[in-house]
Amino acid sequence: MSFLLLSFLLSIMITSVELREKYQKFFESKGHKRLASASLIPENDSTVLFTTAGMHPLVPYLLGETHPEGKRLVNCQKCIRTGDIDEVGDKWHLSFFEMMGHWSLGDYFKKEAIEMSFEFLTKELELEKERISVTVFEGDEDAPKDEEAAAYWEAVGIPKNRIHFLNKKENWWGPAGETGPCGPDTEMFYRVVGEEEKSAEDFTTRDQDFPELGNDVLMQYTKTKNGTYEESKQKNIDNGDGLERFLSVLNGYENTFEIDTLKPIYDKVKTLSNVGFNIEDNVKSARIVTDHLRAATMILGDDKAITPSNVDQGYILRRFIRRAIRHARLLGIEGMFCKSVSEVVVNVMGKVYGEVETNKDFIFSEMKKEEEKFSIALENGTKKLEKTLGFLASADKKELSAKGAFDLYQSNGFPIEMTIEMCSEKGFSVDEKGFEDLLKGHQELSRKGAEQKFKGGLADNKEETTKLHTAAHLTIAAMKEIINSDTEQKGANINAERLRFDFNSDERLTDEQLRAIEAWVNEAIASKAIVSMEVLSLADAKKSGAHGVFDSKYGDNVKVYTITGSNGKVYSKEICGGPHVETLAGMGTYKIIKQEAVAAGIKRIKAVLE
Image (cartoon, rainbow, N blue to C red; front, top):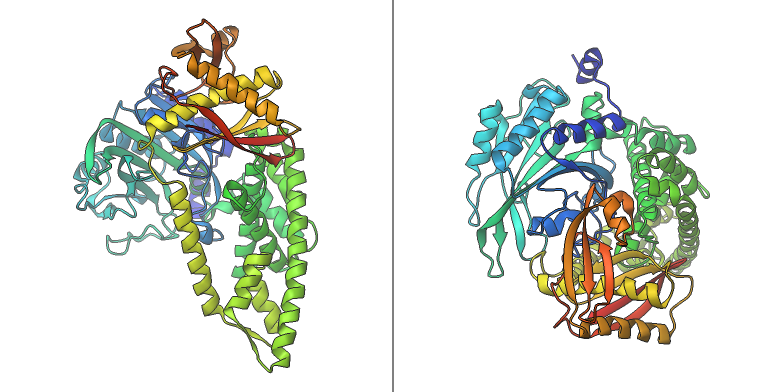
């Protein structure tokens, strides 16, 4: 009997709305407090461009800060991952996804985490335990084999032949940078087709018949600056369960594009196309268009107002849109089509994440601009290619060099597939191997640059980043007093070297305004102001005059940080998770080093402490 038929007979059908609620209610029954999804742009972790997991907004608490809602937390977090972008188009991989997660901040550890995960899978969701396989860390010179986790899995009913020990690449998390919390993880897989059991030798995490449903990261260690791994004082559990994969398995689908948050988008793409879908390449292209435009819409719909560009998050956003357009052309979709697909995404996802509905005009406007830019790039690239082929023909040559193809790719955003196709139509070949070598070299340089940019770890530069985080509070307070009381923070990225701060403004700040902001912040620092913290209910925090930006992200209880000068002046009172310095004494001199436009109505400054 096929898994699809079995699931139908068992009548296991569940919607995304039902699953989100079922998951969070289950863990609430285990003492966890529910949190709202945070932004896709991390606030407390400069090691990544996007929120790739539910743990990123919790970085300060994983490092020891106390969370106002306690030591057990649960939520459903919107995430972006680009590491598997080349895998998108298969049955399971997605760039944007929703991660259901729960955490223990120094409370329970391996035994309870494994027992809860197993109970949720087999009792709450009624998945067959005979189809579950798990992986655990096999051990290496840094940390021993995780026999403890394996024993707990065996105790709940997973037999030894379905407990697979894998290496650090597969079953280890972190640290995010060079140092900080890290540890083994244990991952859960579910056999969706076939009756046979995979042996330890045959089992692979890449097996399409065994999608990974989720994992428990067992933050047992801290990597130090000298490269050793020490037992952590605070041992954390970071669980992540993929909403989309759970929905696919529960509803008997053999790929994730059939679930209710993806099928309407996928169907729209198929409707726009004019090719058959009995060809695997067409199915893959339709999935890529679906995935990438959903990811792009969710990034554009975030309150942090990211726009397409050639750097950082904007570069990834641009890549999503342009790659979607390229694959749309392979499906025979011509003209301006991105908005029509994005409208479906807003209709589906806006019901869950209200900011997507609120920001839909911004989404459609930016999507249109980028589509127009890429159309021009394609037109210019086509003219350039035709000119080059003309020169080759006159020289009696029949192959476009690797450099020629790479220049088109790098300068005009011209996809290699289109270059090959156009050359083939005119009787030319392309040095594809040489192109791949040039591309790999370019990607390696970009990777090294990114590693250097985000060098360090979550714990490496705690003192410096804490000072700059506190400076961000002073920055918005100064802007409210000097520029406009309606000025709001639209995003921030902090590392050990600088503060990047986005805010709403239609006009560039004048030099006088920038110097006034500097003077205001430096006055607060000179006053040797004290930073105090109290935990209040959200309602009481508002009554006290505390400032907060996105109310939807807060729980029932919040931390309120107040910065009070020795002169009695309250410089800042803001709802925040931290971390902050205890006193401004010794912070240094605040200086704004750059101002730039980010998007319509959004400006950015970069500031340092000298």
